[in-house]
Image (cartoon, rainbow, N blue to C red):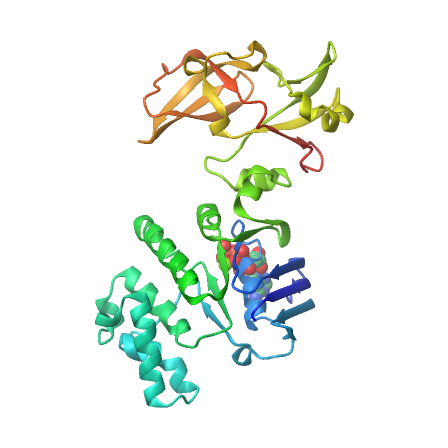
Length: 367
Ligand SMILES: Nc1ncnc2c1ncn2[C@@H]1O[C@H](COP(=O)(O)OP(=O)(O)OP(=O)(O)O)[C@@H](O)[C@H]1O
Ligand SMILES: [Mg+2]
């Protein structure tokens, strides 16, 4: 069994800065866990503490049921693929993959068997005699992964392994790593700053900011029920639209008043929003929950918002509309053939059952 758990783990570097702050994280056996967050939020540091490459300032890390705080990296039975994986340029692919096993004194026959097995899994058997300079970026990346597979570790740690690849190859390797996980049935902790990678690969994702774990859940829960404004804005592309405004009550109904426009709040949200009547809040709506009124029938007039269309961005399968209420700008995703006039007024419809409200001060979700 290879579950990994971090209990109140912190990291303070010698300059006194706490870059990882009291992280509690349980990774289950065979789980694909993604740590995601912006640059500098402490992802690599967290991973390096799990690997044993960085000392833990506070807290405990368990691999399996074993406390590993004082166990050196080489005895932790984990393998790590780094942000800038360095494969030895003067070694062949075979030698690169065999190197770690040789160091550990494995017999030649066993090394042969394991390297061939790993090469088959990764589809690089025909490349075993080549030198790294004779490989494409994606193939090199596979060699770096191959080096870790041959060791059959309990846990794989990946630190942005795809960051050196071009966009198309990234997508391809993303699927490959996904398949690899299914095939190896191993526990994987995968670090990325790319929220698309996080959403598509993770069984669960842990969103970090400034060394603090913000939310830990499966991808759709994080997407549909973000815990705070940061998570809501970080996960999803284009990011969630935010508008500042006030909750007001009129004739027993609640409305969100953003200054230029007003929309009616659904009854289900009343209880949670009642304490905020008369106060400023942050309203959040995803671009796919905004519709061009031309294509919607039966819209309650309270959900219609008059906007100016500033930019129309065709994406092929859909169109991004950059809209302005006169106070806030936001993005709507429309159908591929929707072409509203630029710099002209149009009406859009908000799906008010899908919106979110955040506390202005704490930025925590209200509903
Ligand atoms: N040895 C060190 N001494 C002091 N500060 C450090 C050290 N290593 C990293 N840091 C700081 O710790 C913070 C977290 O760094 P870390 O490498 O964990 O970030 P990250 O989330 O992996 O970012 P990226 O996405 O850019 O790789 C950063 O502010 C960084 O400057
Ligand atoms: Mg990093």
